[in-house]
Image (tube, rainbow, N blue to C red):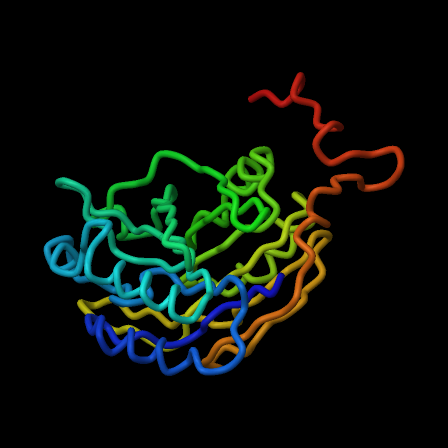
Length: 260
C-alpha cells in the first residue's frame, strides 16, 4: 500500500482557496491513502467560538461533498481535518473518505490550549477497515497521551492517521517513540506557515512524516516544504507484536499491577 500526506499552509478562512490548492497538488501519481492536516480547509487560529461557528458544517455538507468528489475522481482515499457542527456543538474533527463514498468521522478527544473555549471534546476512539487494513485516527494534541495510541493498538489498528497543526518542537520525534511502544505505522500530516490573529501567534513546524513499526522513519519532509509526498508500506507488519522470541508487546503487559 502507498500512503502519503499533503503538507501545506492553509489560507485562514478561505475554504475554496484551500480546496484549489489541494486540487492543484493532485496531479502526479497518488497514494492509496492521502492524509491532510488538522483543520486543513479553515485554518486554526479562531479568535473565539462565534468565529469558528461560521466555518463549521455538518456531515454531509458542502466541503464533505467536495472531498468525496475529489476522492472518487482521483481514486484516492482522503483523510482530512475539518470543523464539524453537530447540533449545538462544534468539534475539531477528521473525516476519512474512500473513493467508494464510505466515510468515518473522528472527533478530537484531547483539546489543546484555547481549543477548550471553542470546541467540544470527542468521546471515543475507533478503528475501521479499508482495503483490508485496520486504521485509526488521531488529531494533533492526542499524541501526547500514550493511552490514545495504545487504545487504538488494542483495537487492532495497523495504521494511525495523525492530522496535526503542531507547534511544539518535539512531537515528530515523540511519534517515533509511539511507534516503538505500539508497533504500528503512523502518518503525521502537519501544516506549515504562521497564523497571527487575536493576540495569538502560532508558528507551525511542518516536518510531516511516516514512521514504521519499531520506530523506523520512512519519510520526513522539511518544515516549510509543501506538496504531496508518499511511501510504500506493508501494513501487515504491524500485526507482529513480538519484540523477540520471549517478549510480546501486548501479552507481556502487567495489568494486574498497573494501578495508581
